[in-house]
Length: 383
Image (cartoon, rainbow, N blue to C red):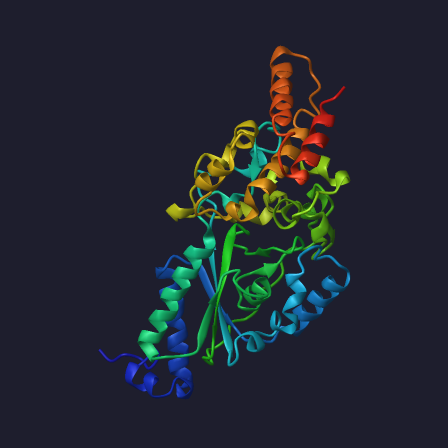
């Protein structure tokens, strides 16, 4: 049976000149890329061009208002963040890919919001660090393309460079940027990672994702600190993810009570999003919770030495904040524990006594930053 012209790219033709591929062969190559991506464990891939003028304007508006806080790197690279061809010269199209990360074993974040003695860690950080896994899979995809058509110009990114990944994913048809600023997909919600391959291939482009947020404002209404200051506009300085991961200084006193038991990141805006009822569980073993971090005891985590921390967060995205910031965040959570439960039952009194003892044990820590947060937390348990 004869094959259609689009069924497969002829390697001999492609290797002559990748930019001279016919439209049919380019479409066939794109179809193969999408298929190879799914075989590598990505749930969806799309192709887009490098025109991000509208998103560049939004980024500049966001930066002008100081919403990046201490994240100076958001300004450092100038227009290279919003102009892919400046970051990686020769870039014509971008392959955007997403991979689901929420596993069936992970306890839903909303189940822990009313458990003040348990630590609430953003669900994306419960397993192995996604950066290496996605980067390796995308590199395998790029290598597969190279085997098919010969050498071509490309670079893989997974939070490893100044990339507007959500803007690119939206343009590539993977979904739309929701009012909470995360990417949403009608069939998969928002519990997924993104990665990109910048290429010099003139691949056919996909249509941009359509916005389906409608009149819904659940994410805005539910944000504990009011960080979503308007639809599609987040002030990072108020965001719990920023406060517990990016900020290396003291957490503003007025925001500490609002953090609750969240010690690394925050999933509240995603947890209440109606589209996440369509989210699908990941089958990636590397994303399964490790060391019981999906529902760990705050007091146990607070007792970790630096050696414990390094050992138990090995290969995890959590390790990047360091032991001192880890303890700072837990101190705030312990200060918030039992805040709204002033009961004097024996169990409650024992819990409070254990919290105070744990906090007092850290008062002599060499970190002034930690001492200040411990002192604040102790004050919350003073009648």
